[in-house]
Image 1 (cartoon, rainbow, N blue to C red):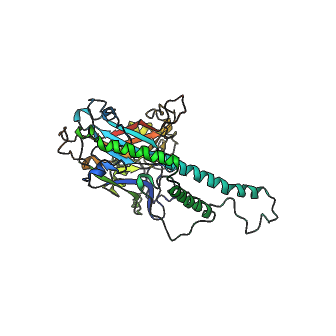
Image 2 (image 1 turned 180 degrees about the vertical axis):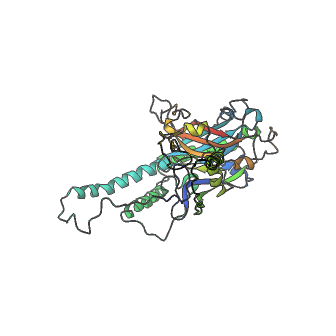
Image 3 (image 1 turned 60 degrees about the vertical axis):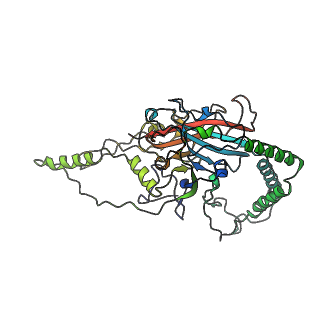
Length: 447
């Protein structure tokens, strides 16, 4: 969507544009009340800040996944949240651990992120049924297309093949972290959507009616057995003795940006050099140069964007563009810079040798993002931690590590496997029922 120069821009790449209501495609994680309910503390479906991790499967993973790669000690859990993908049959949880020791800061491996997947048989069946139902609906449509028609292709009733039949929306990712962006319920379904909605409804009804098939009974019995085992063996017996923060509920909301415009600056007359009065032009050029120094536009944009919702601790946009903290090696590695173009300025006290090059977000060209070691896929941005998270993390009284939180990062960017893989090796295509995969975290530290 074209925008004027006066419109408030999300980033240098003009991404994450607001819709007509002012919402962006970014989901925000904001802190809420302290988690005191014991059942919630052990429920992996409850997204949280701090506390001890809760797991979907049993046995629980080793403490090795939480250990700082610098001091080798278990680190504190920073975040845990459910982030299922709509078209994936796997339940999906993301965990982020971070060491708070001052001696470990500004070193690689102090912040670690893990992706856990567990195959959901019931949801997999639902996805399969939906695909079959949609295929049946498409069959008569394909057959009708092959029949010759006597209609006038130039008549007004004919659809324009170049018209926009869909509008940009949140679609994929709407229900990430259990959140869906507010929608206009007064609008009726678009033409052609009735059948698809019917498929979804029928599929849901089939799910309810077929819960107790023989195969599902076995699955229910197996799940019940696992739950009984977990309840008899304290599910957090090892993790409760590890360093931890006071647990808080992590609520989610869609990012809203109020419409704003940049203040217009009055144009200043250009002073030219003249014989015997060269100081005027020299001073003007020197002033412009000095005022342009030590200004990190990336950091300015970061603070301005976060100021729209200061409580945010997490920004989530799978496959989107992160909000960078500052222009540092990470920022430059994830951006490509085209060659500048000379732009002479005639009649001025000086000439600009080249235009400021416009950087383009290009993560696939970065050496800082290794491919997934399991499937070889590229990694894509999924979420980032914001500075307010540090403010919200308070050490629990029972935590064995009572040292003060000394984390110094500006933001932590989490990149995950674009294929969301869950297979046993790079050469084998065997899908696993569950898996743990460590993902890449790029940390932009405070200077």
